[in-house]
Length: 300
Length: 258
Image 1 (cartoon, rainbow over the protein chains, first blue to last red):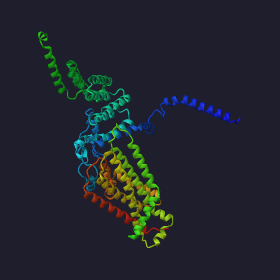
Image 2: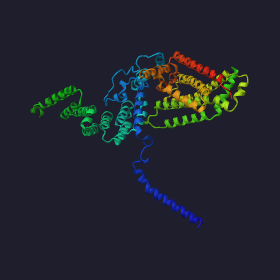
Image 3: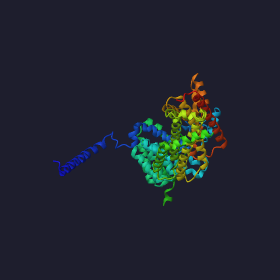
Image 4: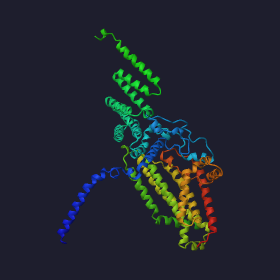
């Protein structure tokens, strides 16, 4: 009974049993919603509170954009309601008002006055040279990227983090491939996001000059936006206006003036400044009627 | 002075015999190296997040070393029954306090030198520049801030019963000052009397340790601070160090040594 052969066979049997049980349990375990193996480390450790951390890292990126000159919870932050890294992309509604230069207000006492020598006390943007006012160092805006990436990792359901990161990667860092990969990653996480599709269209149009793909992506973005309920549409009019305007410009360049007018009209419906768009529509309509007035004989 | 330096020498020797500094330094180096290995959009020039993490770890480590070293000095002497023989020698109680303070403060200076050397090397590796004066200003201010902390912890070690309670209270007070010290007057505005006056008095009496936190300036490569402001801040720190040490001498004068 105690021969080495028996022990070896017993061990072998146990090994086969372990392997069988593992092979049976592993797929079930991985498929389970609560499984740690499916989620990332942040999801396991932080749970839903990771969104809160994601927001604070998103704000941290904005603080880096200002080289540390940023209001605390005790300061007047009316001028920082919408983070400037997002507002400066032009794709986000800005709710900022007030004095962004002097949120510290007048010096309150000698301690406050003296203390202001020991922390950043001037409003600057990294892409405009930062504290050194050196425009050649505008690519220092790269310093915001780690916090944006961390924010996206913690809260992958926030499309704005992807669009803002991709904008800075593409516009200032000239890292188009990385921007596209990041947007695609965002699109996998948020397949219904028209914001990400809009930014992806901009990338195809402005960086790759691939108008066909840009058109397809923007048209898909319009479809996604149209599926929203009226209340949500009302809150997200800016992005729709931008998508429609971009599509109109694309069609105008391609010579499809009637399509361009249609897109400008679509933009006009959601725009806060419809008058400006009306001027563009009138201009295009004149071009259309002028081309229609060309005598038949001249065509031959 | 000779007695003070002798006591200080013993404290410094104690620091490099203990493992606190080595452990904290190795942890800081390891965390920074792991963070530096993270690939962020294939850009190897991104440095500021790394500087921030490194400086945060340096600040935490330095505070831990300063508070724990200072808080255990006199209780340990009492516990080992070496306080009485020490004072039996031609060494007065104020000399012992000042010697202990000097030893702890110099020990903090040595650890800060190592930490800032590593920080400088880490920054230079990424930014390809060596901002010696900036790091010197930051290190000097940090060191004087630790001087206040050490003096405070020494006073606490004579007031509170155990080093652990003293350390905990010191960490809470110093953390509180660093986080909200600058805004106490704004907090007071929204309060009713008599709390408003209490908070206002606190604002004007607590040492404003946040003056010495130049991390944001160093991380974001802001220009140097004018030296006259640095000098004023150092004088401000020296005044508080002296206040805490004199208070410690007064308390110690009436304390039984065994």
